[in-house]
Every structure is written in C-alpha cells, then in structure tokens.
Length: 223
Image (cartoon, rainbow, N blue to C red; front, top):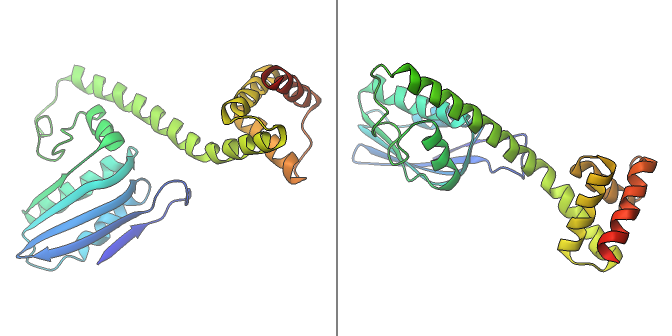
C-alpha cells in the first residue's frame, strides 16, 4: 500500500510516497520524495493503514532527497504513534541535505528518535538558544533553496535563448544575465524572464534601463 503528498511546486520538488510492507508484526515503510508541507499527514495516513497487531515500525529514509523544517513535525507524528501504541518506531537511512537538517536541529541523524540528545530531559537554556539560532539559519537556508528551485527553470531557459541567439556558451550566457542584473539593479530572475518573454514574442516590454543593460552586457561578455 502507498500514500502520497502533493506540493504546490509540483515538478520542482518531488511528491512524497510511502510504500508499506508488513511481515511477522514488523512494518517497513519505504519513503521516496521530499519532506515538505503535507508529509506529516501522509505519514499519519500510512500508519493508520497498518494492521492491528503491528509491533514495530521501521522507516527507510534513503529515498528522501529534501527536507524542510516540516520534517521535524513528520518525526513528531512517528514518535507519537510509537508512544501511544507502546511499540518500537525508527526512521533511519538519512542522507545529504535531510541529514544536515537533523544535525542542525540537534538530533542524531543515524537515529533521530532514539539517538544521543533526543531524550526528553530538561535541556540547558544555552543549548535551547543555540538550537533556536540554528533553526533560524536552517529556515533561511530552506527558503533560499525553495526560491532557487522556483527560479532556476526560467534562468536556464534564458541562457538557452542567449546561446541560440548569439551562438555563445552556457557560461557566457550566464555572464550576460548576471552583468545585466548588476547594471540595471534588477533581480536575476526578472532579467531572465524578460529575455525569455522577448524570445517568445510576449510579455511586458522591459524598461529602457534594463534594455540598455542587456545590450551593454552582451557587448561586454560576447564581443
């Protein structure tokens, strides 16, 4: 059986899917995708579908490629499920960016529910403050990643337009976009959107400043 969560960035971030198998009272849930908005509900649905008598639940997280702070709520759902039913639950196999998220949150990435530092004894206030600062940095990093995921396609399209129009390399096209952005004090994604829209023959006309900046950038970077 499987469950899935959908995201407004469909096609950019990957939907979370959970495949579950049960044998001898032990459930193994294999996850693929990203721990983003909706992932906790997806897990709750998958856990609710497990048969009565399940005595242990193991989550295989090796297929999870991205995680934002919503993933901490995901772990809370799993932990609560195990405590209420008094069964062993584990989530292991964390890699790459999700592993870094767990480390910044002060959890053991090898076993975030049971590893060192995850017990519920009182935590010194200095540690609490440090973790709060780390989570603030984490939220900033995640937001930057989200913005990059959204803006990257239009930038890649604009580079392709410049490469086709001016017979230049990918690096040269990137330099044109960056130079035009700096000269006109315009965000890079807006410069890219203008280049793409002009090639498609639609969209609003760029400002005179941006148009001049693009001409100057092309002269500097391609001539």
